[in-house]
Length: 297
Ligand code: ADP
Ligand code: MG
Image 1: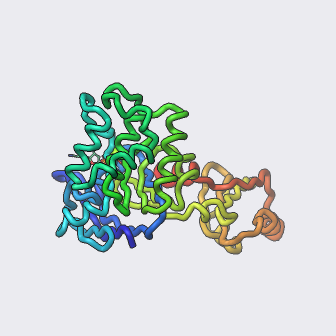
Image 2 (image 1 turned 45 degrees about the vertical axis):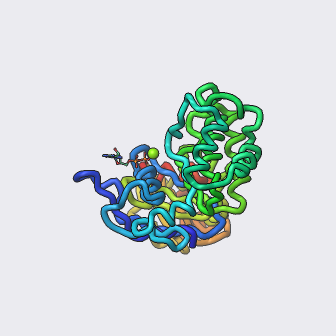
Image 3 (image 1 turned 120 degrees about the horizontal axis):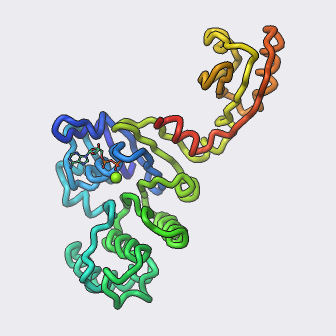
């Protein structure tokens, strides 16, 4: 495993930002880290990268304990912090060479990275003169300089215009090919376009941890059924292969099933057998957006 987080809790004074979070990330996967503002995403990332310590729990990166061995661990981690703090007055090349000296990386790597992230045309400018998209490339370049196996990117596309967004997203996908990537974002399409897996946190706890291919599968169909009167929960629970149910409003239920078949006919037969009238029957695909809304609202 590239990342292993076990029972991490973080208190800021008395406020619990993370509450016994556990997850692991396989080598080579790209994981989207989602959650409303204040959910604890940046806190988790700062702990993963050794910038702050957890109150409780253990974090391993490439098997190295980040708390016990932060310097060794950081050699394996590239980190693009939230809001990408850069020195506006420094020239792109100068800044990256300065970063390279911190990481004790040869200057030839700087040239290579500049090419890799598409910074060559802007390399003679001051960082402050660059567009936000190119500033993000500088941040990514700095994170990649020491060729870490694990990349932690905290909202790398926030504040970019639609073109920059597509470019940076493609770049993340490209550099992520031979790395393990954990990145946070507010954009669901981004997760769908780039990630293999999504982790959603709410108030410091994981509420969803799913592979994107599971989300795309039929297993995620939601059936919306409206009966002619309000059924008892006990009754709904008799539906075969029912996985979850929610009485959204009045006589309408949202149902999911442990089956890849279209379950509308099963719901229909169930209603007939029990003398119920169906006023509406629809099937939705529970995509990432609805999953996010339902799990964080
Ligand atoms: P996210 O990145 O998901 O928006 P954060 O990890 O930044 O969430 O914050 C999680 C919670 O912890 C929030 O309620 C935030 O106000 C609080 N928090 C974050 N950093 C600090 C800090 N340095 N001191 C006190 N509270 C903090
Ligand atoms: Mg944040």
